Image (cartoon, rainbow, N blue to C red; front, side, top):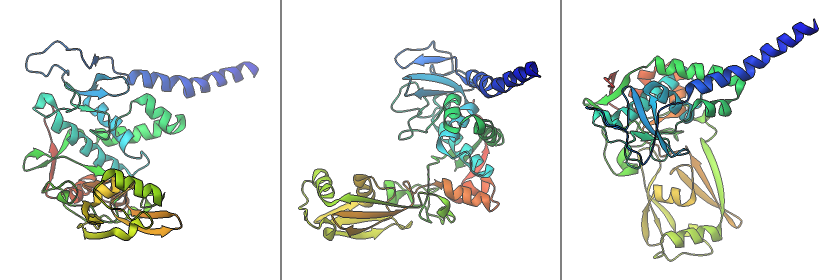
Length: 338
């Protein structure tokens, strides 16, 4: 019995420790190109990639890694969307992520990553799309959730393999964000450029997000300092700066489009960024020596709301229905990747 106990313990340790290590090592990418090194050019191919791969610039290693396309998509979903979400929401995210990189594939005549020559995309979410490898997934989810979550993401990716979103036969820019305030935004209300498939739509069910309502209190003297530093030409009321604020126009999505601070008219998005607020759907009130900001939603508000997508999936919507709801007038079809 003592011997069999040792054997049993060894088997458990192998399952818990050994197998994840094998999976993680299997997921590592052998082909890497240092950012400043030129790879041998192949006729008809971009020098930064091999057939069937994405040339991804990884900021941590400062290298371009060649990753199989669908494996790259799995890493994006793991980084960008909670793996606990409904399957159809994960599928919608998979198609959006694939569309994003498809539009930028250098080998398909795409724009590539403007910050890193030779790369299709980078893993900086403020510039391209977030991405994590299997080691990072294991750390993020823990050993007991890793297999379940990775299996879900794998199913979402392979269940939508090759699908891309098009508008007028051109791949779209499938922008997305975390949580809406109940409506998404028209593109021109946030970024000035009119995009026909990025229209304001109703997005119910967002209340399940922990970031649906957020508050932040900032000391008055800090508010004054930030405004004076950003706009030196504004004469600021140092005791009651909020008395000089006035909302001039709200967008179709209910966020502040333009507002007035003293004698200056600014964008709501500028005000949001200045104070590090979660969205441009902002209200404020004085609380002692602080100004309390209350926001609805999280993110820029344009395109697909992730929590909205999950709410739609919970009510039975398919990933196609989710994508066509958030991206107006699009079609979803198989694309010839290479």
